[in-house]
Each structure stands twice: as structure tokens, then as C-alpha cells.
Length: 112
Length: 113
Image (cartoon, rainbow over all chains, first blue to last red; front, side, top):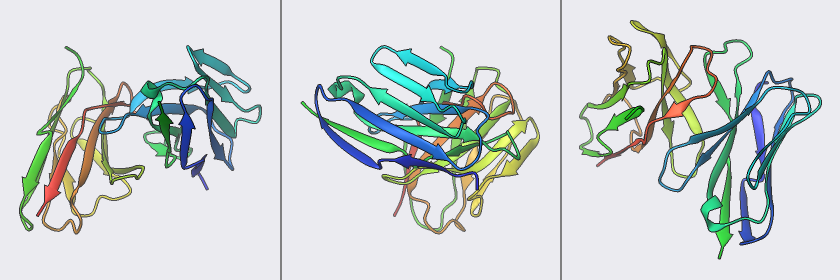
């Protein structure tokens, strides 16, 4: 269906290590969005990817959209304790673009 | 300051009581949404509104009600019919009704005892 699968569900890293979370769909996506939610906070929009093969960077964060527009990844280089939180991907509902379908998120813990 | 304001941030209620969560936005956004988030879980859509005086049920609307009488306001009532109301409630809005790029309020923690 239109679900998006996010893996891994949890990731524990040492500060300075890299981190990657993946978002996969069985159907082609018109776009994919990424959000970050800090512990106790609310989700904050990070980025939207629209084009096939698109790569965007935000400082240590690199976002990729697959060539087939069915998957996406978020890679963090040299994690810091400020990266702690849950990262969600979300896709527009193909039949009704008035709501997003959310992945279950990847929770990142960083040991200082 | 522009943004989405939710109140109260923390709320305790006795079982069987209705409670209304406030959500106000001054971003001039057409669309507004209510999500529920349980600890360690993802986001589940309760209700959404594309325009004033119109709203649609999301995936878990049972036990909830909303109104959209003004563009900037989208209050959520958690009724006594909601079996497990204790959760974190997030209000959100987007510029247009296409669901892209959602902006969230800070959330309301509801505990029913």
C-alpha cells in the first residue's frame, strides 16, 4: 500500500560516529519529507525531496532521494549529542494529497 | 511571533470528562491538523481541515470532535467516548491543503486519571 517503512527503529551510536536512517516505499513517491523530533518536543520540518536522485545537504546532514523515487535516506556525519531525537519520513497520500503518511521514525541515541 | 500555539501544555482530567485542547495559528495557513502520539510511537492523524467550516476524519477520529469556525483556530475536544485518551496531542498547519510541509505546535500532554 502507501505505507512507508523506516529502518532501523532504534540506533545507538558513539559521538563522532556516522548514522543513517532509511525510508522505503513500495510505490513511487511524488516527494518525501523529513522531520526531527527532539525528546519531549514536537516534530520540526527538515527538508523535502522532489526530484529523482536528488541529494541535499544541511551541514552534517545529507538527504537522498532514490532514482526510482521509492526510497530515501538521511545520513548524519560525525554525530553530536544535539542530534539526539527521532527522525521521521513522511509522504503525501497518493489518493488524497491533503494528508501525509508517516513512517514510524528512527530514534537516535548518542553516547558522549 | 508567528507560529502555532497550543494550550494548555499539560492537562490532567478525570475519566469521563470531556476536555478541549486549543490550537491557534497566525501563519495564515489554510489547512490544519490534529495528531496523536503515544510514547515511542509515530504520528496518527485524528482530524484535519482544509478550509474554514470544513473538516474530515483522519485515521483515529472516534472519541474526538473538532470545529473550524475561524481560519486561525482548530480546537480539539477529547470526549469521554475516547477509550485511551492519555497521550501527546500535536496540532499542525500547512500553507495549502495539499499536505506538504507541515508545521507543528509544541503539543499538549493530556493525562486522564
